[in-house]
Length: 116
Image (tube, rainbow, N blue to C red):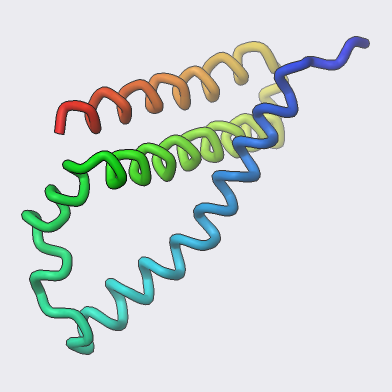
């Protein structure tokens, strides 16, 4: 049986998404769950205007696009593996649905960020 040449790409995106989630989730919990309520940051630190300004510049768009894209591909891969574990062994359909949704989400994130 021949190996798929695209398989390393999916595993790479999966690993990158997991890494981003593993590093960003604790930071966001620390910021919004502990430091903000303790008054280390003022309420304007996460205000709508400040977040819109961040998403409005090119660096903010790049960061948000990277995080969203890696999350979507990580989620798509986990869903494919979960479907297999649940007994849905139609690999072609699972790949098309899971990675198709990740691809659609990636395009949607790009279009949304470019419109800000």
